[in-house]
Image (tube, rainbow, N blue to C red; front, side):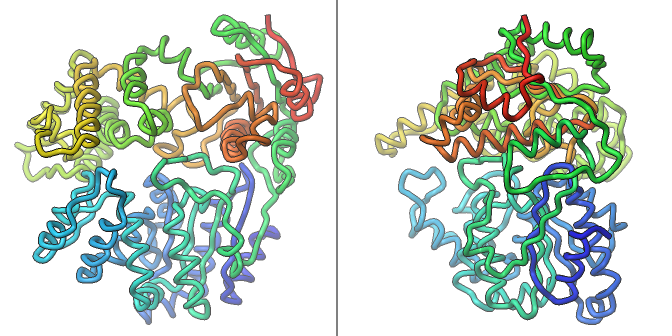
Length: 569
């Protein structure tokens, strides 16, 4: 047992809540699973006698499934996503839930598209149960979506002190995986409300790394670094190990950050870490040729991962430029959420439609059945199976030949899945009646109507191409794909000119300019750069298609070492 795991064990024995911070490749999930197994061994009888469970909340369904599998799906551990865990705690308390929904609605800005008329809501909720569904928000129907659930839960815990006691009676131990990506309302519920009241009967363990906070949803971003007030009752534990990366890459990572200095924890190779300046698309290809011919890289699909922090080159090559334009024309946070994979519509296509189509194409019948069930489709008979085979074959055919509207129409008629309410509504009612809307709502409706009209007219193949690129060539794919992704060789492509982001600037991060003027953007850019650079097991190369100003080059030489910074012709 290493030092960090020994400290976790001591905290559990002493009933002391703790915060494990560990850099990339440290084995955070290993430590979490080890802690769960320790708890199960030492507290199994007590938990069973009291009808209690250990709570373990994760950021994604993928992480949930991986953790549950590693503890052999032990029924004494409730492994769930953040939203499912919160919903289980508050759903039984419908009276308090209705009051919280009403209070939440009253707190919304008048400009919010979620907000409804207060008297109408209170009348509607009198005889309705509040539900949580992956369909979109409809407060008049008592239905909450992801972001609303977090806010409503926080109101409930603030207004109902007994809820903290009820929660701890069910879950005296709670572990939070990837705490940095957990939304502020959730962290404030656990550390700001429950723990101070119940610290003698409640142990919280947080596992993560504040520098690996890269998801920046405009509505409920991850908390990132914990504020001092929320850390007061937590024992800090640092795990400096790096089991994944070669020594050359560890040295780079240690110069990107100054809070954790990692050390090789296994038989780490020396490896290499290069920074290559190149000119546009031809320069990128020259860099790949240089790595293969002069540095001995394989540069093959099965060993080399290319992570693009730009869409300019790939949208043109990958064939989804019109899709980016449609989101770009919508403006505001929609474009940012789209590029980060956090837009609800693109997430629906990514996590529901494309996931199902891919499972069927690859003949993975077990996954296909699971996805169908998760999407609300019931297989009751052999006749159902024959029907679903035809509908899935048709879906994969339409993906290549049809428009977005035609694919959605097929999904709606085939009932393969429950659609987002907004998509369902726009299919049947492309334009809404604006006669009773004020000027602001009328303008918003015009923008929304234009967006959906243009989106629905696009070839669906553009969405399929974007999803393929996103899942295979961006660091954000961990939200939708494999936890702790790692690869033999990693090429990170930087191109501020084509990034189309306002939340990141790698030129201004590396030149340190943003540290003076836009510190939060500097941190976001640093975090994303760190995550990308920490993926390789053997070799790292950053290919920069951006500027070469003196301050930037000097800082890059500090991080990578002068001998490893090269110009590619």
